[in-house]
Length: 167
Ligand code: ZN
Image (cartoon, rainbow, N blue to C red; front, side, top):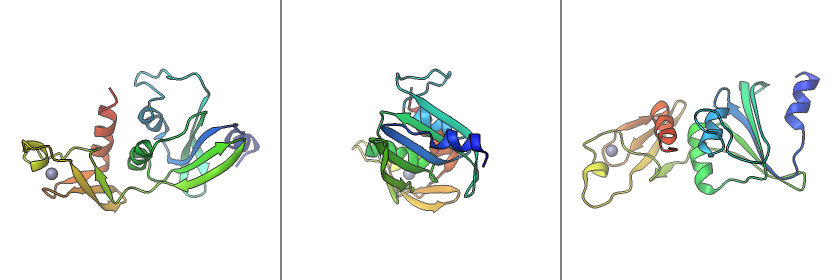
């Protein structure tokens, strides 16, 4: 890695998060998912947001990195992120130090976040509200199965659903 690349990656923030090892090209999707970037490209915040795209990565070949000052993630946001950027490492920074570091993994079960693509699925036609529930089938490519009708939900559809709900 070149000296310049390195300094871009490690320049410190006092407080916030660094999302490392995002699959190359998904950085803007991550920012949209967190409500920090609008579809037409405007940034929705006062604090600094760093988006580094296509950085060299030993693990992934190429990766995106997102750094957000003075922002932390809720459980719900982490679950959504794990669905669109499952290789991501989350670094939580307070007082200039990494106080927490963990890798996102796609949840074994997803409840309520996604909709079954099968229009005849009981989770969609029942009069009683049924929470759509999906079980992880495989991570690469990311695939879930509806527990009610066995319909498969694949990575592209998952991303489409999550992004279409941002409004
Ligand atoms: Zn279903």
